[in-house]
Image (cartoon, rainbow, N blue to C red; front, top):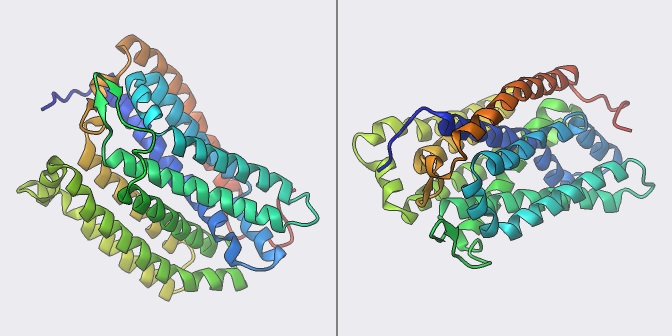
Length: 336
């Protein structure tokens, strides 16, 4: 058992949770655009796809920096356990993100863009897959002895983590497809509009498989989801998944532009809520709670002052960027 307290460690845990969710939502769709790159022919079509995320993709990754830096500063014990456990997938993810960024910049200057096209797709797919591996490893727990990681180098490679890696690729692909339905027109919009229903079926199926498999790792998770009266409080999550699924099919059938993207975002928000219900209050699942891992209150208070100043600025310029570049992508204009 743990003693809940609404204090600085809890506030910082919520801030980091929000930062991670913001990253998954915002960077998820532009990773999805990269994953979809090889399936679309024509240089101009790929230019439009890339231009749809060009104004915002750098800013989206701000949340990843905030999440990683915040974990190191506010929960150093958790950082010292999680990093050794996930060195390989995290390093591979960073390589993918770097390679994607390089491909993004060089593609617009290259005469032969094909290599950079596939580099952009490979970097996006690798980053998404590694994030899924890390997520699966987090869910299935880590070997911790005396507040230190005691597992092996390859404990993150299991059938479950491979499944979550593939699931996140598919989820980001759905986000990318619905983003392009919203941001493009003509051939591209019609192509991705046709792809969305099939992607939705795959993503929902994977959500169901992961949701059923997750309680296998720990009886406490099963009790939280399926025991009475807890099931009354968590049952809205799968019910809303069903509602959002129907919403995507309805909005695609009615040829809506924005609604499919919003419904697909809902999948991620609900899945994230379900993850929080399953694992709270642990920041290292079943080993270390957020209160055990937290830095001293004096450090957390000092950091919170900076966060209170910086977070509104980040939110403001993010909102401003999306507002300025709202609407459809103009095929005659783009990133240079």
